[in-house]
Length: 245
Image (cartoon, rainbow, N blue to C red; front, side, top):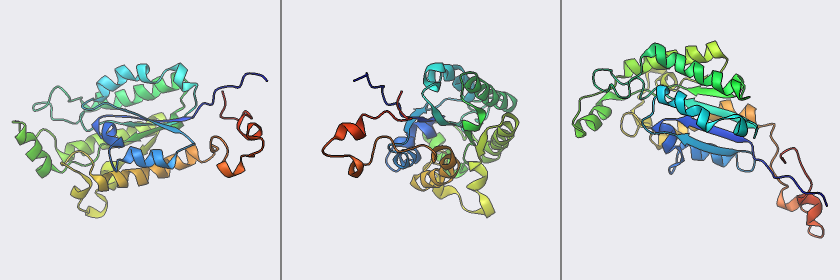
């Protein structure tokens, strides 16, 4: 018998800041996406708490290079802006100017394209809205004044949407969707900035709408147990498929 090739699961990569890093916590939005994609894709969490696009752009080539791009990346989310939009006089370490933020997003898409991940596999997610009263409490507990504003987060969200249009990426405008029709968005946030369980469900639902068409064509990896021939399991389990490599 010839040597069988290793099965390679396609990947959905979640790349972002703390809102992504926390995505696999209980009731997290990443967990919900991963559950939908069991036996279709590995959902890889590459969330980096506190990071902005300036730092993300530098580390992305160490996270996605030619080697794992060849492993069939079905989609990658790029979810930054909540730190970039920090006020420069109150949080200069994380702040990134708006024009640089826009260019950094485009540069990340350019890098991904250079290693074979097409722009139409990239999904930008804008920063969510900021509920200032709750976030101010968090800041004051740490001995600092309010260091972000919802209106400024909105400017970064708009820039993210524009950058996606300019480089051919998809975009999920979380900032706008969570405030649609003037609804009270505070319940979507656990502390004014990060997502609550309700916010995670909201994000997962809208993100799935964008991911579904990218992953639907992918087959379930390995046969359903009821389709395995108990008298000759090798016939079912050792046949190379399009997911083998």
